Image (cartoon, rainbow over all chains, first blue to last red; front, side, top):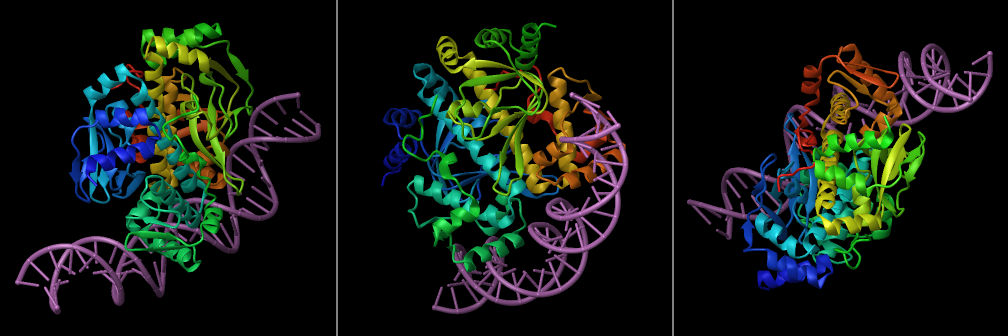
Length: 244
Length: 244
DNA sequence: CGAAGTATTGAAGTCCTTCAAAAGTGGTGG
DNA sequence: CCACCACTTTTGAAGGACTTCAATACTTCG
């Protein structure tokens, strides 16, 4: 499929709104491709555009003086990349491609112009910011109050649900391009411990995970273990709509 | 001072904009007072208004099945209370008064009407959402990658800076109404451990903390210990302005 | 003064980390 | 096509940060 056709489909799927899809497609300029491991922006830099992820997976992270890394967001196709940085004019995180990616930029001035014509784009931006925040809340609850096994199970549930909603997997399996080291940086654990906890999930026949592919063998039990309540992702119909 | 005069001053201080201050004061209706321990809203409920905190301190938290609590935000005077809930139409957290509080509601329909006249309020809302997210990122980094001592030191720095910016303290001291149990729920630690770590900060002559009042005895060393870089709070002039 | 909440202390145990090394995997070039 | 290299995964052993349980002191407030 041609990238821009694929992109339009993706946005339609992700926003659930025809009008918004048109706005977005109209707002974005030429796609930009990045290799795995390449950075889109570094912490403290000034973002020059708002990026929509068209293909691949991106992580937002920060480093602490000790050198270790904490991931603060994961983005899947259809997501806006760190919208708050666009609002604040400065990025609090570094953005790095976990897989080869394709991004669609919306230049700052074009965004401004379009928002004067209609509030659609701003409303989408606002909703996306709220959703990103809600996801981070869930991670924070995990890091503060859930043991490693549940935390990992929860992440698996989240990624699986979001991948499926982005059309990149089905009920039973999806792409899962994170290394165990990546997972450790998301969950605030050591690689060694992630490995051991992962093996517990595998030997409990809850998941299979190999060569970048995740299989859910028993979603019901996994969801119970993780205390996963997918409502907070607002993945239902009309993702772009809100209750206001 | 009369509440509404005090409130106007507070918003002026907090937003740094005369125009915005007028909009906010105009948008809010009668103040509402709540006692310490009272709830403004519970998780999963639908917020009926956008609240501005005029006096006191509020916590946003969630409970996990085990019964333990994780705090996800703290609000000081001048802050909007959980703006994302207003956007999404559902609250992901419970809001509870840590001290006696005074809140100024902006009814949903009044907010809508005002935003049609001018984008000022929406812009403020958006900026506040971005700032809340940035603060939570910092907490998450702490929970994932910083040991308890640094995490506590960081919280102390943050609260002190925000209190001062809200006009509720000076360089050396401010109100600090959290119990050790509250602190534990913020940092994702046990009360016992918070107590021990707090004693380390005290015996290092870094802080004094008693009867709800915090004193910073050596800000420089505390900031170094905590790796606290206050930029992320955007407390400088024109808090309401942004780089877009 | 009594009651309820808050702070403090000790002891034992657990979850997770660190260090270190070996085994497996995938991609690249000879 | 195979050999090699970097990266990733896996395993073991020891140590440390933090938790839990339980009891005691201290505050605050009616």
